[in-house]
Image (tube, rainbow, N blue to C red; front, side, top):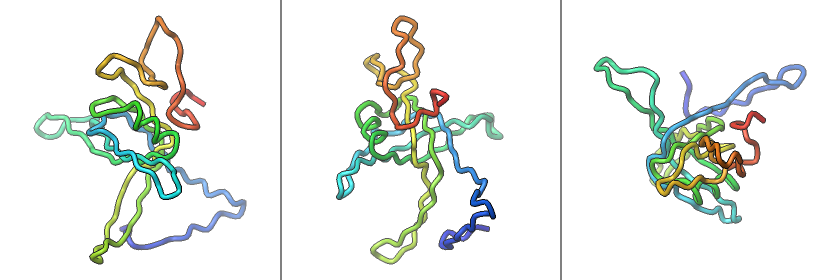
Length: 157
């Protein structure tokens, strides 16, 4: 069992390669509008939550969803804040991060979130406009537009 308060240092193998993978790819709908903030040094960050449907039904035959917290930084954060709103279908490529902290009243807290490397709009907004980087099929335009992150895993790069 993992202890949420343990800090473990992983020693690299003989050749310095850990051979470990921490990669998350999600497609879901935004639960609420994103919250854009800036660090004291001026770096943009945004938090939002994705509802991701499970691929199976429960015992009652109903489909359930997981609600996953996402954090994006810099250009990805600005993209999310500028173009994405509640209800939009979004693709996220990132890594799982588990961090802990102590509140002002001394309570230990543990947070599990996905740190997004790339964020893409996968549908049209309510007004029918495509966000830059949208992956909606558009035979007439044929253009892809800019991405919501520095590396674009959804484009196969």
